[in-house]
Length: 149
Image (tube, rainbow, N blue to C red):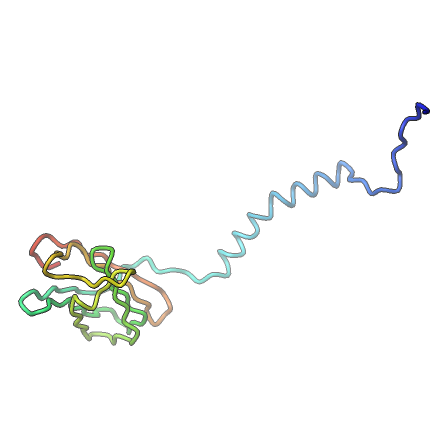
């Protein structure tokens, strides 16, 4: 055995101090560039709430939720949620100034369980729709026991 010191291999590429600084700076600036690119390229969103009126008609069997489009444009992809758990998706467009009447039995949980008006009271209604401009808008209604929104 010999006590030879291992020689470094000069043929391997090495990262210089300047190369390391440039690499770290580019890695640090990459997320900022990506966020800036997304900010510039993605469409703007509308913060204006949906112009909608909601009525609960309780004197019919089953009770009905009436959605009135008071917006200045037609809606598509209308989603109505009762109590944050029962959903109804309306696949047709709802023209400006028109109303949509939905029986509460048309609302189901994600598991398929329908809304039971005999055992449940409507506490809140959420309406979400896509405007013609492409913006998605929502509006929440809190309902006191036995009262209309």
